[in-house]
Every structure is written in C-alpha cells, then in structure tokens.
Image (cartoon, rainbow over all chains, first blue to last red; front, side, top):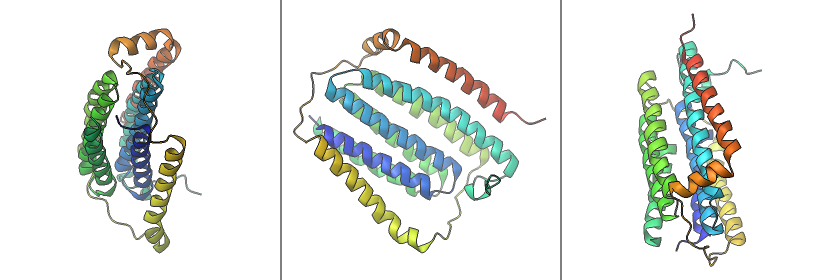
Amino acid sequence: MVPLAHILALSAILFGLGAAGFLVRRNIITIFMCIELMLNAVNLAFIGFARFLGSLDGQVFAFFVIVVAAAEAAVGLAIIIAVYRNRGSLSIEDFDSMKL
Amino acid sequence: MAALFYILAAVAILAALCVVLQRTPVYSALALIVVLCSLAVVYLLLGAEFLAVVQVIIYAGAIMVLFVLVIMLLNARQETPLDRSRLARWLGAPLLAVFLGEVCFAVWQRYPVKATAAAVIDGGPRAIGALLFRSYVLPFEVTSILILVAVLGAVVLAKKQP
C-alpha cells in the first residue's frame, strides 16, 4: 500500500508545478490550464485523505471541486473569448487596462 | 499496486512539466490530458471508483474538449518569449525547489511513511450518492444554482456585442 506521505508529496509537486506555470507563462489559455492542474492536485490530496481516514467525505469534496472547475472553465473561457474579441491578443502583456 | 502508483506519479509529474514548459497551448492541453488520465487511475487505486470515472468523463472529456476548441477557435500560436529579469531567471527554479522540498518535509514530518491506511472504503456511485443526497443536500442544490449561473454567464459573456 502506498503511504499517505507519498500521495501528499505527489499532490504538492503537481500544485507547485501548476503555481510555477501560472507565474511563468504569458498565454492566458495556458495560465488557465495551470489553474486546472492546481485544482487536480488539491483533489488528489482530498482523495488521499479520504482513503487514509476511512471516510467518504473527502471524495464528496473532490466531487464538488470537479463541478466548480467545470463551471469555472465555462465562464473563464467565455471571458477569454470576450477579451480576445476586444483586444485581438491572448498575451497577458496586452491586458493592462486596469493597471494604474 | 504500489509500483503502479509510482509509475503513474512519474508520468503525471513529467506531463505536468510538459504543461508548464511548452510554449504552444495545444501541446500543453494534450499534456494536461495525460496528467488527468493518470490521476484518474491513481484515484482508482485509492478506492475512488466513481471519481475516477467522473474525472475521465468531465475533466478529460468535457473540460479539455472545451479548452482545445477555444485554442483552435482563437488560433493560439506559440507565445513570444519575454526577456525576464535576471533575478527571476536565476532565482526562480531554486526557490521553487526549496518551496517543494519544504512542503514535502512538512508532510513527511506530520504523516510518517509508516502510517497505516484505514479499512478499505467503498467509493462507488451508490455510497457517494447516498452521502450526497443525505448529508450534503444543501451544497448539492447550491451547486446546481452555480451551474445555472455559469451557463447564463458564459452565454452572456461570449455573445457578440450589439
């Protein structure tokens, strides 16, 4: 059986990679995919804890996270389409109209 | 079982690196699908059968199709490299490694490797559904409102402005 520490370590590594990609990448769609990667890392931690505490509540939480991620993807991609229509670009360097 | 987990973990980490390092969005999306599918098998190993299937159907199916569709629709090409500050270039990767090492160390101290698992749990649709419709009825209904709002919002946002 895989120890809980290794599952949590995998979760932390995936979350760290997602966070790094969020900060490094310049394409807004790739940034959005890095957010999905972080959400999946959190789901893995939830399911690992559910397995090791012998309770299904963690799995139900992971289910809610998946549902919220689906809603977030729909709204976020709609925002990306609207922004692209206005700016004609996908680079976050061009999305600076709220900058002081 | 354990060997399969470590193989899948390696695949997931390599694919996640690919997601982060690729400059072309469509390659990132394909690598992300690999991450999602290998995580689905990990869920299966951890006794979450229902969530493994949901992961493949909703994440790798619906959400990633939406992503690839938008990438094609907007014709997202390779992003242009940016001249970052020299400090970020030299300190970024080491600081990320330090952060990950710190998290892994904290986890390792709090949850020792010898910790034993509880009794095998049943993560099938029947058990999840019973819990969802008994203990978590209110969050479930709120989620349905959230999805309704998301659908309306997506239509309004993506609509062509008059």
